[in-house]
Image (cartoon, rainbow, N blue to C red; front, side, top):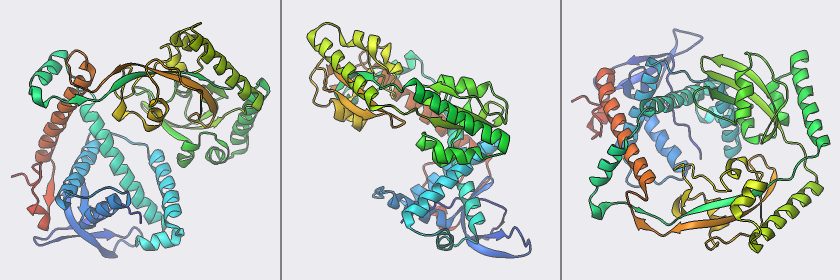
Length: 462
């Protein structure tokens, strides 16, 4: 059974009593009517935490398969206090989140709730003791918005935290030799990717269809969002109606997509344009300073079986040339690979966690590990057939090199990993200091038995 974490704050009257505080929710239609909702465990700034929030958090974690061994109610309560402190100060710092993005997330969550439970919307509303679908959606909206605000506040706190080489050296030197971390076996991974190409006729067919969508919206008032749900090949974005929020200072999406979006005016729909994923049109829904809410439709031109056969023959030929010694793997990648991210790097993949070429086997993506686990040093793999991020078929060959066995951390060899550890420690201290400061200047009231918790932070302001 799935559960909602009820972290809802709306138009509320907080009645405080020495023994127990209760929340009374004012009816939005009849301001004179009210009913008891739940006991108040805590107030943090403009937010409340209900007694039931802790229970719902436990139920949700269990529903997700998380182990609750060693986790206490007080620890979960402390985490809820932290989240509300972040959310409160996000509002104080004028951090804005996209209401459209939150509403789209709620739509998707409701679809998931209905699918997982097998209930109708009416049964779901009754199960969660809500008055109607609107109040249910409103509560989910506030939950999601609060969580998003908390997340953005945390990012803001640490976004400018950096470590100098001297700080990294000092961090490493203060670790006793017998306590230094051990890094698992590492290696580099390279690949050559060949993707079948759609015919010019099929490309034009996709462009024509996008132009039809565009005209139908602009000339006939059709819903862009409905067309996303019905036609887009970006299946992941269906849950949000094709919505993405772009930030000028934080690149998201590929460059071609950003260039088109940032050149548009609010309410415009772009002409069809191409990226590595296929052909798109963008509807610029809202501009909020440096943030752009855009919806897009992606169409991937159909690829013929003949093109698939040609691509497979091409990569077979490349593999034969490498094994025969006619060309190196790296030069073959630069010459022939269709993967832009790795082509200029001789086919070498960049580890997203460390931004270098080294992958630790124990932390490698399971799918990638499965593809290279049996390869010897500099051995060229058999041809791997897989689906790309948008479902398109592609062929690739792989190799591993520069294998380094498990070893105790070495400052010169493992500098980037040690730097990341030092940075994480500094970020933790910055967040800790921020929390200590904000707790003291924020209105916080802990009620009833919750005051007996042993908190890691000074929530009781003793």
